[in-house]
Image (cartoon, rainbow, N blue to C red):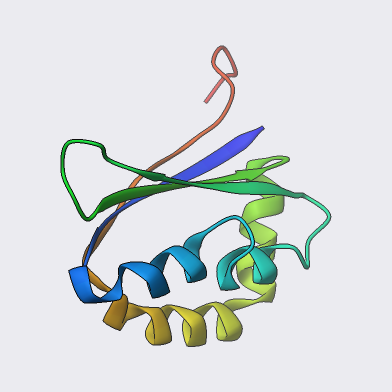
Length: 103
């Protein structure tokens, strides 16, 4: 399994729209669902810092994720630009694969 984690600070006035777009049935998940290698998304909210979220996108492997991004670059960019207004900041925490696998 391969996971990609993003951290967001969300505009307080945009929380409902953000949760809808980034949740497990949201716009991003619908795009990713075009791939049989997409395994799902989790949207988590920080219980101590209002407006702080992380998403965890699960894929069958790094190669599948990279291939998907290459094939859907234009649509990914359109959604990213549209959703930019929902957040105050966005940063990629990292992408992680199984431990013990040679680099």
